[in-house]
Image 1 (tube, rainbow, N blue to C red):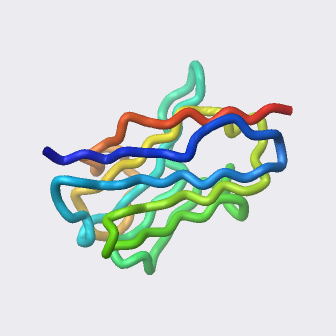
Image 2 (tube, rainbow, N blue to C red; image 1 turned 60 degrees about the vertical axis):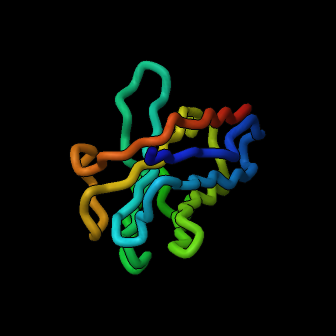
Length: 124
């Protein structure tokens, strides 16, 4: 059974940092692009960061550019999201996803495996 399990969410003060981790099991995703999405209350799920299979190409949404960093360890089958300078508007459920393509994708329809999500709350 293929699973993506996120961890590292929680409550943090504005300006603080959190590191989210996503561990994949059931198959290797070393040849697949990976992404982190988030969904805030009352809003649609949005892609905030994506990474190609090798980690050589990345995408960041404007809202997180310069503050968040996506990385992966193909040997461990993990992908992380380092979040710095957090803002109250970063509050959301964060989802890890694996794409069916090797180059990073900004299209949610290209992601066919999803984690259950982890809550991030930022207090002002």
